[in-house]
Image 1 (tube, rainbow, N blue to C red):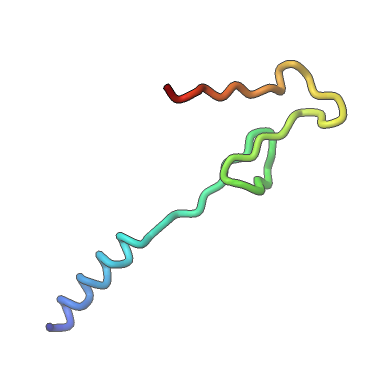
Image 2: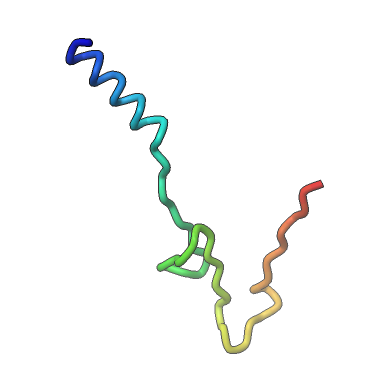
Length: 57
């Protein structure tokens, strides 16, 4: 196999194994998980600080 063929195989191998690491923070500038949701006031949360997660059916 020539040098160009090895580069192409290496590129596709890296492309297949690539898993991006991203985190999203809501009311949080430093998320500790993939989805990190913080209330605006942890000592006295408001009714608007809730989250509703839909069920899979």
